[in-house]
Image (cartoon, rainbow, N blue to C red; front, side, top):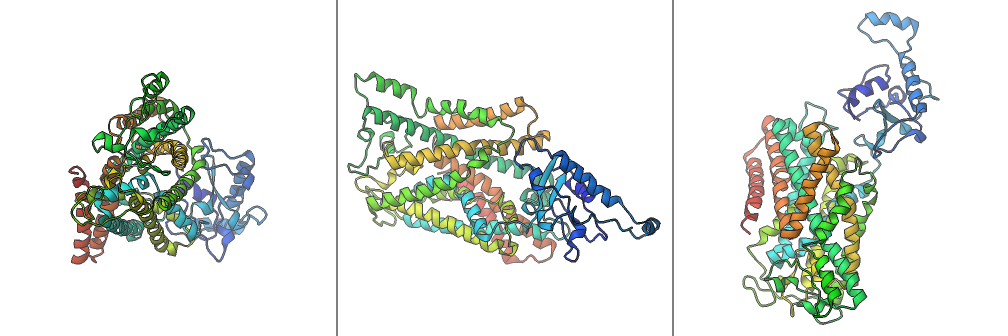
Length: 572
């Protein structure tokens, strides 16, 4: 909302100005006279949806705005003489039948929008602690969960569990520093600030543009992973339908277990690398099967089919329609938990402990590839760029730190649950633990019913989230460069073609979601997770003359860890 601060001054009436540095959407009320500072009111029937592409207020609401302004301009005759003094004249207060109760107040903008005050004022939100915790958990639960078992395999079972716990604690502390970063600025009203505003305050334009760059890295990295996964899920869904119709058993063409709960090892036929080819049995005279494989190939055709489906959706001006499907993310995660639990019960646990020496079927407990897991976890625990926004609507602001800690604990337990069950229940022997794929669903054949349902859920969820990620990338890049999030269809189309092209290229030539996640996670985490929170804290303590050597050494060590986490990814 442009010029919201100046708008609110015209729309609020007051006998005495008790506000100190009011910020946008930070309307403060004097408890002794709540009615004297009520914002402009619009009846609920005249409120428009915030997500609407064109936000307009009805003629009735506009007329009410003029009526409120009329009351605010009325002054008593005896008060007109006060205009020549230093005192301010008292203005007429609108009567009760015009200005309603505080809980029914809305803020009106001349741009044509009406926003309910409670939803945007810090501390006045309706979200309980339970809702806030669930929102944080749901936001962090992304595609990284599919690569956690692979990360544990790369690090070793014992090392992997320890790394997950330690990374959870480290990222929680850095996130805590992000939440507290605004309170370290005592000279300004920062109640409406987001984290990029804090970076801009401390680092100037460099902080603004660098935060934009690393934010785009995380967004585009997530969109590339989504495209690779959507290609994977779409391919397996089509293969399931084709094999079901033609009564084809797809486990005969790949190393697998021979029981009622088959588990496959696709990388065994591809030299240990993620398999990106079709897994269909071919018979010399089955032309139909060969034609299907020709036109339904995981790396050569399916990634291109998604272009016609998703590219038009990226060009929408408003993504409000897709935001209605956010609940699918929760459903998908819960179904994955159910799937993993059921598979573990049916397969049982298969574990042997060898600390340093690998065996034919088991990996050692300590492996030097553990930084690959730290790269994945940096993105898996990444919520630092939006945590301030999520906590603003918490009804009890004093519980922010507690709720954040509980949410991180639940996320850590979820990752441990998925990772441990998949790793421990993977049938070794006959298969080696090294067969665990970067997307653990690839270890289940396309004919597996539960895996088919999980892929359908995830495919539909990602197809609704992908346009939202594209919209966020457009807002951040085009909004900063051109000052307009939709300068023209040409600008938007070029940006979307670049993003889609990157996704298609990766799906065709580098379909390794674990690698993509760890590179993008380590890159964006370097700034948002490790360097910015620690450096801002050091600067603020130095300015307040409270910086001590232990605090300096500890936070410099965190920044070094972030830098090492990024560098080591290129040597794994």
